[in-house]
Length: 142
Image 1 (tube, one colour):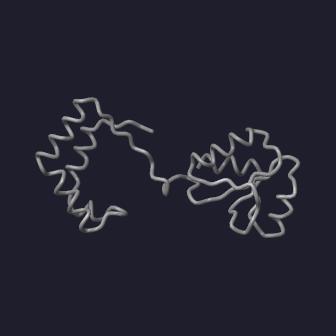
Image 2 (image 1 turned 30 degrees about the horizontal axis):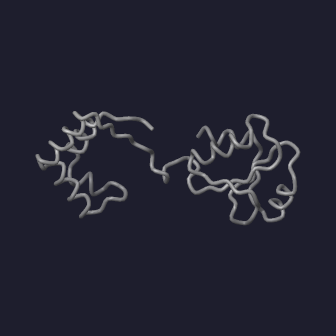
């Protein structure tokens, strides 16, 4: 997670117009107005600067909904050549995706490794999208 200088965040939020806040995804009229007013109150700004002086750091985490594999569910079958199964699972989860151990119609992708097992056959039967390891690696880069 990147650490951002709190004074930069304060300045960015102070510089936003009420219209810009209202147009921001997930912020409506009332919340936009509330944020706008909060960052123009001198007591609130003093609190933020006092926290900064005390060494408080603000970390920004990319929202899950914006992560690359957000909402996608994967099943791994066979042996992956470029990484262990645990590494692949971690990468999927780090990018907002989910990993399942069984194939169903709710699965978005079955990642095909070397010598796949019955999961491959079941995915074909159910019409689940099957991708080769190379395609999976490309997805991780996007």
